[in-house]
Image (cartoon, rainbow, N blue to C red; front, side, top):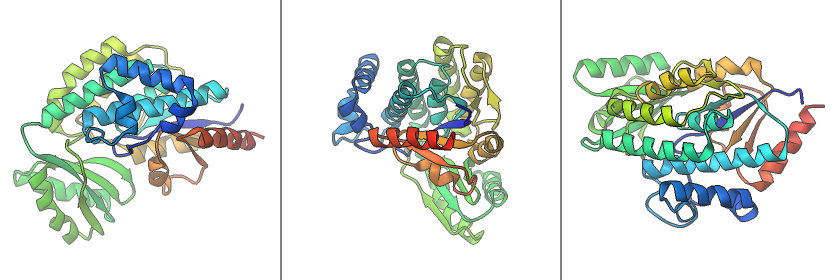
Length: 314
């Protein structure tokens, strides 16, 4: 197959009750992966994913749930077709699922890893009330200037997710974020809204999580990349365990350069395939590319995506 596909994986915020259930109901492989992940972590993923509960929004459970569903989607796709990625990429947590797709880490190892990552992030934020806020409608430079001015005044706020032109997420102390809302609106932001997040991702408040995450990464990462992975930290490709060990701990405390990453790969690919629940990244990518974007979130979309890519590769 000559078509060049980028495999994409969403991050925290894409979760929803019932995600992955169609895979589970119709695939023995999906059932086995859910069982294996449950046995490894002690988390009842069947209950967590498919039943009403108050855990799915807690980061130590959210992260492995999203990764597991994305990894199942990718496994079923890979088993059904010979389509291989020319590059893999994820948004925040999704970078770890991208490593699974690149064969740099086993899927169940990755579930355990990001369960730990979620626990470490929650612990780092546990002694202070933190949060995240989205700003819409003003340039990145304006948001950066506002946040820098606020930090001069002693506030703890940092731009952390560069999602698309005019959309940037800010992390920090919750009361400082609340005080930031009118400042952003004065700077002509169309919207400045607190998000339902219990952690402050990709900022210096997570420094304590870096070393223990790196230690676990050393145990689990392989040096067998079948495709390069785009780093959230640099927006550049890497394909070795050594590079991953340097970049992934940094990812906890440095911004996600998602829109920059899209600019890095768009000229090199013919289409995008997003694995996991929903179409979060398709929404972000509307301004970044005009190339086809497919999603594998259930059995029907799996079949539709394979058929559509075969049509493109004529």
